[in-house]
Image (cartoon, rainbow, N blue to C red; front, side, top):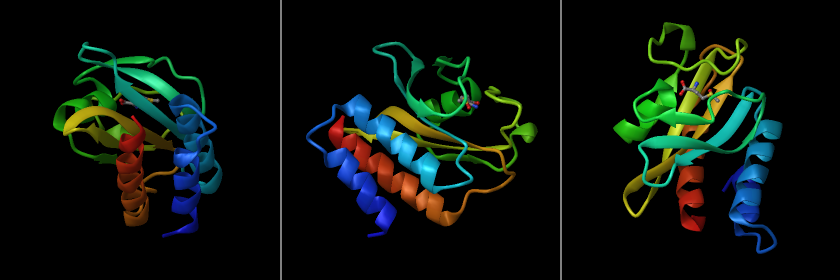
Length: 149
Ligand code: SME
């Protein structure tokens, strides 16, 4: 297991912090360790509503604290149940801009008991920055996060 995965596991397993604090620390660690991650946050299904609600995040404040299913990259992932990698956000029609600096985005869904309950969303200030290793790490992380929900 990579050093970063070990550190992420350590945070998620910590008995000292609640879920929100753990997710906040996960965002901070990813933001600190991966230089092309420039906004890192979680969205979760808002109760029974077909919308996402912003959870813990690190990065610029965003207007998109609530995102209806189907809207933007996040809302599309809430419906498709599939990871969405956007190498260049300017080429997307159905996109919600958070910052003019954002060039690329990756959104990975989180499943609990087979249900799509949320996602991790990463924005980058670099075009086409996300690697196979990033994807593998984020899918692993979402699986680990699911266990503490
Ligand atoms: N860009 C996202 C909205 C969330 S912000 O990036 C934080 C989208 O299109 O869904």
